[in-house]
Amino acid sequence: MISGHDCAGKPAEFAPLLENPVAAGDNSVIYGQVFPSLARGGEVELHYYDLWRRDCGQAGHDLDAEHVSVLVGRDSSGIWKARYWYAAAHEDTLCDVSQVARAKAIHAEDRGAEVWVSAGKHGAFLSKAVCRHGCGADDCESEEQLADGRVVNLGEIAAPMNGATWVASSRWPLGEKMRRSDFNESLTARVESLPPEEIAWANPGKRPVQAAILGGDAAVVGAATGLRATDSALTVADTNASGALDTAQRKTGNALARSYRGVLKALRVAVRSGSSGIKK
Figure 1 (tube, rainbow, N blue to C red):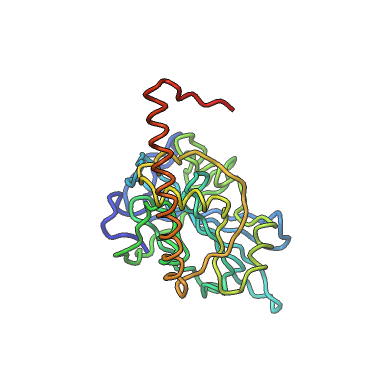
Figure 2 (figure 1 turned 135 degrees about the horizontal axis):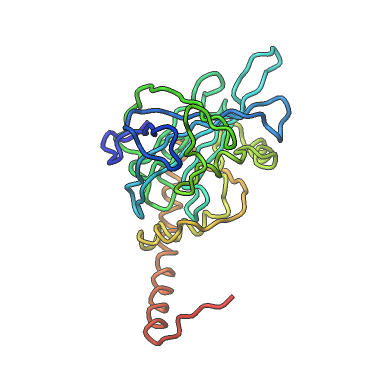
């Protein structure tokens, strides 16, 4: 599900055999990658990349590499089924709100998951309700289903296919995303410890800071880019409990906003007095 008014149009196809990515048209091409799971023998991980010519949200920039992924394996009858789905949203930033869920919880064991892509920022969400609980820059309203496009195999970093020589370009994080698994053993174990119907944050340790940003000045979202934190998991209620989440987040956000404004005021005083240096 994508915004019909996204300023980047639709996921782009990129010109082949170039060192750096150059969009050749916004024609809904999805790029794919397949590799055996190192953490879970006999299972296979698939990544589906929606690549955009630009991120046109807050702190916008040229080129945007986003994705969802799925871990598949054989059931007791030997039939291939999805085990878990992962939706990447602002990975490797302070505003990382990526999620993971059992395939059964989102009715996507033998079909593709329904994924909501935020307008402009292109973060992916496994439910529309979860889209509202990041740093405040995600909008999944007024979305429509993306018409089926071609799926193009990227191959591997060291052996790109279909002319995808641009996968390792330093101009975007696609190469880093292709090198790592989204389903490490500790994350899937934590998901299994949650009630079966729930979606989990992939990085819940960032949630308190995200609440502070959401409750404070939205411009801080841009300053979050590039910050990293350790991986962990935490339950996040889905649609049925979205009202409770909204209430809790507003209360937390309001309280943190007051603290945020106080800190900001103190920093401005420090800057004026020339004592803004910060040491480790």
